[in-house]
Image (tube, rainbow, N blue to C red; front, side, top):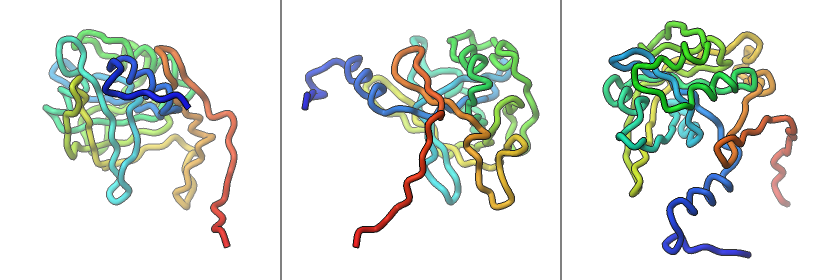
Length: 202
């Protein structure tokens, strides 16, 4: 095997190794509310981290001028909405990934439809198959190049019709999510799935 000592390679090289290896990564399209209106941005350092209560996390690096609008808005208002990105909305999500000035409403720019949330103030996106309203639990800043790890508790779930059955089972095929790969433009679909039951050794 080829090995690399992280203390002997650059942070850029470490980043390439990490994002090229930890794939596919789910994408959180996060909406927040700031002093100049709504904001939407995607993050692929994202996952569910607790089940009782359900908590989600995403991590956001700084831009050159400091913390991103998403992080600053959550620091100020302690609320946000996480949307799962489906194949159907990937182009609109990609528009939200651009680093716009704070006054730009990415929801409108991307052609999304904003809907009122139930338990939090930031709007949700009608076109997203899943939206999870969250209240902030904590933000932890880590690393030499600061990343802000945002943890939120889900206080309300939204699903498009036909995704969840009466047993609360979610049809991932109906969501049709995409995942993030390495590079500025790498993504994947879940077009090849399989089941593998857990069988204990005797």
